[in-house]
Length: 130
Length: 175
Image (cartoon, rainbow over all chains, first blue to last red; front, side, top):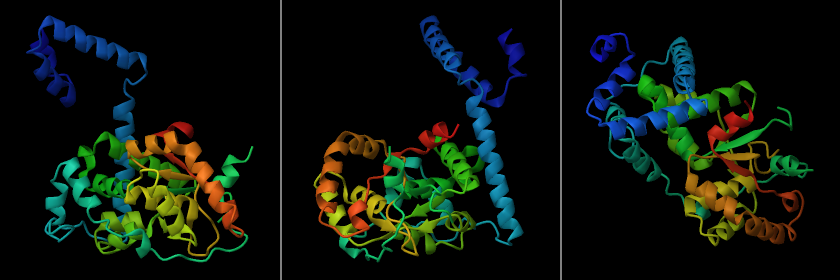
């Protein structure tokens, strides 16, 4: 019966189904408990819905870039740490973050200090006002 | 630009996440989804999004990448004001890393191109450790800032601490 239904499942659920086929009863019950908690906290559908929104925003931004005649970035263009754009993007999240953070080497004393108008607006002060 | 326009200082990994999620598309992770939604809602609301001079210097080298260009076109640079360095050094004494101290100091002693603001409303970060450390030490940090600003001329004597939040908290607050 499960086999017959797999064809109508979403790709993501199909992937999960393959994984859980090896679960024993205790693991199934643990998973069921997690799913019920997710449903109770109102997370059902929220994730995919937000992802769709994010993808729509991305498409809009890239379309705007195309309108401004900015071509897609080439994967073989040099980027940070001797890596190309494509090589950097192929790294894991942890590796990307590590390499990115290593670019930030300025010492506190390397920063310039600039004048501020006497009547400058102080956002945080306004927000904390009772 | 109205004085009441909210101001958010984005940390370097918010910038990285925004840029990589434009590249990754459907493969973007949950944090990237949150950053993109946060950016879009802030942009639509007219919020001023700012980055540090260091983030700007690094990203400007890669402005030919369309993902980087899109990001840079949507942000301003928050420069250090007078007393930025003094405050950053004092923050180091609270156990903040050099990177965190620079970010937090800009949040209180940063200014825009016109010198029309001092500090920001909120620092936006993905760094949970920074958020926790800031929240735990906030009373001490506030006391230290008050001691320092008591000696300073206007407007620096009014400098205040920003909030430090994750992008998801902004999304939750704004519904």
